[in-house]
Length: 150
Image 1: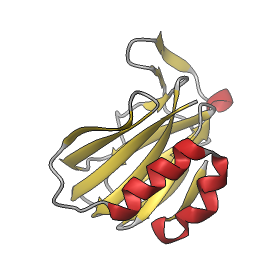
Image 2: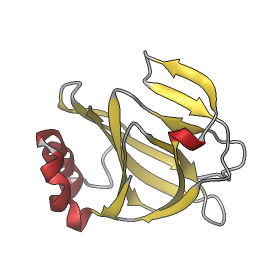
Image 3: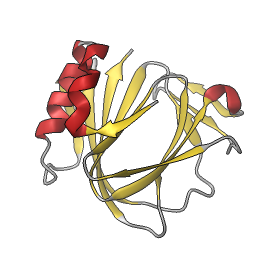
């Protein structure tokens, strides 16, 4: 897991050309971009633009992915995400290949991450994460999740 500001994103382009494309998109992202899916390099790199209200983490599930790495970028607002290595989590929903996810029960080993405007977190396949959580109370968020094929 990596947590940083988009202003430092050039440091992570060494992860490969797919990350170069992902961060080029995030650096040029405009918060008035309509919600939806945007292909950046076919199914190898694409962006999911989302607008929603955060909610309490209670009852939400941890997730992980096998085919894609998530680059979760908060364009506007503030969001709490929880992180735990998948080895510390108990699988609740086995892998769903069609949608590339596993779901896990809550974990006492979780670390809370707070992302605000211009910050991102990278979650690799071994990183369980619980997104879309509120910090203190529900709040509006504009977020981009760039999916980078492993």
